[in-house]
Image (cartoon, rainbow, N blue to C red):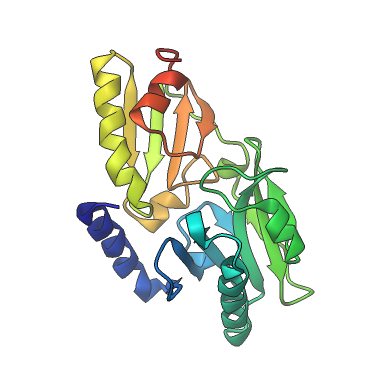
Length: 229
């Protein structure tokens, strides 16, 4: 991650701390952290009052296989109980692991259950702490992701540093190849909570239909557009 990418990410975090955001990083070097926030202040279109929402649980590379995911999640669970929360919720793919989404098999093993399902195959999973609490759910805009615009349309925030690096490169690639490409940069919570997709960090549409939450490189984007193998 470049210095500028790091600055953008840290600034996004800094502006969320007053909203209750918590960021824990392992003492070990590498990509190993958890980031969560009261669901009322989460930058996703869900209805989950009284829950904590996990923005990101990230353990990668040599950090995998050492129990760090379990440790980080347990820290979040302890915090949720200490705060008197109803439970914890997080986005994952339906049935299998997808890029930039949590692993549903790991979450199921930890006691999470599916609360709601979006038409695009992204699930909202939750871990109940208060047994009688109402389950969290997607807002309608996230449950049925669709827009009217033609061409490629990208909704994104500064929550992930990779968007800062790759989005301008994809924009340039689209321009060079005459591909209609529109970026809607989300800069406030209210807009994020009304994005027409379950994932708001990166939500790419084509001709009105949701394509992916996976952050695209310029080469991957051109392949999606049918211009490269």
